[in-house]
Image: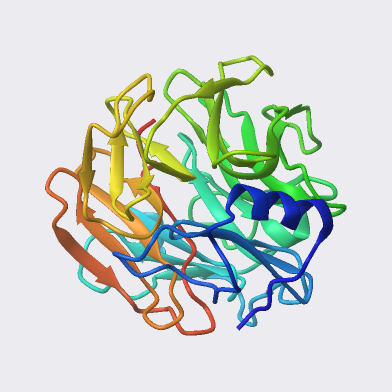
Length: 347
């Protein structure tokens, strides 16, 4: 079990914000029904951030390269696919979206080092937060190697999003010298950062999402107070607080109606209607990391990042019925941490 270590301002700030949490916690998803958990564990230089059931990791000696070569079957080029990233395994599995406990039809490993957050853009390109390489990499549909590498020097990107203009955003948990984190921006066609989104209360930056109007939403652990969210209106570098209630403040997505979807503090999946200034409009008993919707909003996929029972789950987005459980391709040493879909999810 990792041991919580004292680490200056970071751990002190987290302890002040989340004084009710104590002790180290194994990496992985907290079982449904457990009390919401938010803490930071540091062991051998690796940071493990728990916010409810959400798990974010960066740094340390456990940075993972895959030990297999990238491969993509012809089937992965002609049908709707699901991507599942493994931080521990250093790879991304590719599955057909249809089926039951589908077997992988491809695996990406080239250029990846502890991959975490993913996003598929309107041109069917997969963008990956290459956390411990300080980069974001892009794969074209059906390709086994990246076509581009975006440099994020001295920061740990853990989530990624892309707007309608092709601008890429990465939420950086923190820098190699410590907090605060921020959001790195690359305008279309650039491999070096073209802007940085910062906010006075940022300590650890968690999730980033872009809605259909290209507004950028960022979830974070602040310097004081509970986990929170801020919005950067399209084209603006000035953040505005979002008064969302009962949100776990981790990873997020948006459905085709403009609703924000993310985990609640009760380990369910919440749906918030704009302007996201209250409690969820509805909740589903769906559980896991990285909610991702398919194109017609019929199914929502989640990564169950647990070492004992690692799998990806597919639920009916309207009813919450569990439709698919994918355990093929996952092991106790290579668990899924994020999911993405092609065709891309609505925004």
